Amino acid sequence: MTIRVLLADDQALLRSAFRVLVDSEPDMEVVGEASDGAEAVRLTREQRADVVLMDIRMPGTDGLAATRMISADPALAQVRVVILTTFEVDDYVVQSLRAGASGFLGKGSEPDELLSAIRIAAGGEALLSPAATKGLIARFLAQEGPAGAERDPVRSERLELLTGREREVLVQVAGGHSNDEIAERLEVSPLTVKTHVNRAMAKLGARDRAQLVVIAYESGLVRPRVE
Image (cartoon, rainbow, N blue to C red; front, side, top):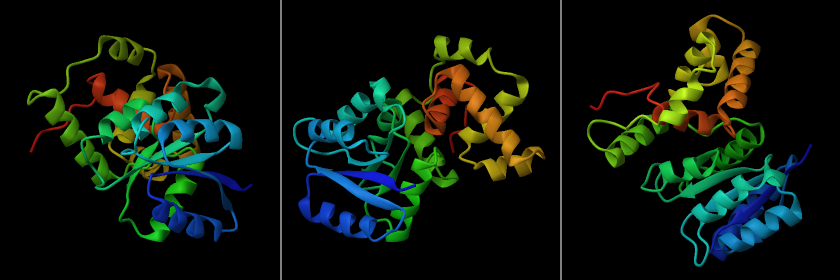
């Protein structure tokens, strides 16, 4: 199955470089290019994109607003948005994940990292490495105040729907661990972990693993130490 990729960036040269890279892979193809968020949303619908590489800073409708539009459209439920940032963690990352992005990638990443990111997103995983997650949460805490994020009562109530094992898996997901890593930590099979993750997403109304991370912290289930 070929992964259909949409490129959204206001820099034509950067889009051209991404197109050459993506089209060189046998399992993926670029199905469209957008120079602003509104065009990105329109082309995502028209071209049936699987993954959108979305720059945040674009004229008119920016990438953040476009990500919200895509995530809010039931017809685009299977579309995954990967935010392209100047830095791996910046002021927009938390907002991007809340808007429905599946993860983020630095513009200075190596070509292999970009291609891997597309495949990971298309496979339903989240682009949140442990290091990136640590930075993300540090920024999240800084935005919400030194005492940490206030509990979201709605999120907290929905956590009651989870079984003990599902909550345990959610904590591991919030730490940025993959299914294989969680399976090793909990001494279960990766398939069992995947089942727990999918059930947690369904019960919590999460679009993907990245949304599970946000829920884990906003609900107060996970409260990292501030170093």
